[in-house]
Length: 257
Image: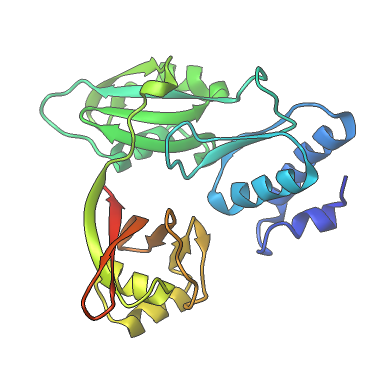
């Protein structure tokens, strides 16, 4: 068991001490009593990535669950063993109107408009006329009783029973050509701007690699990494397809739609 001061050092940022304090209290329950201790809100990657590493170093079982493949926001539990109660679930919100399409922002805005805390909501994937939303189980009855419309569109809410049938994120596949897998080269190609502009984006903290802020322009981007560029989108980096005659690499990319 570690002190609060040392626990805070897990996270490479200084802000949000009250948030880190809540997480530490859950860790204490798990460490002191050797009991299952879930954090009852969805965490952004800047938290759950480091908590996973911490639990693996401490040999503490854990659950890190976002329900969707490539989920960004996830629930985290200390001392989790299969069979323990998971705090979250997924609902399907069906748009009952045939006259107006709805988008991610419409669903999220209507849910938050009920006065619900953003941290009780995970990822949202919209497919056709249905939004699949990760939520805390505690707020499910409230949403079912109060979310009657999305904007002016009537809706129907159905709990999802089989998480294996959840939709996957949709992608647009294309190739980029770079001189190397250095981050500045990759950002330049993905964002369709100069290498100098790419460096500015990186320096300003507008680029994430695997959901964490990356400020080292010479970072070598590995296959399987996810790069997010503010205002440009999120990209999954795959293998090198081939090399050009000039020795540059042709790399396959999936852009999240």
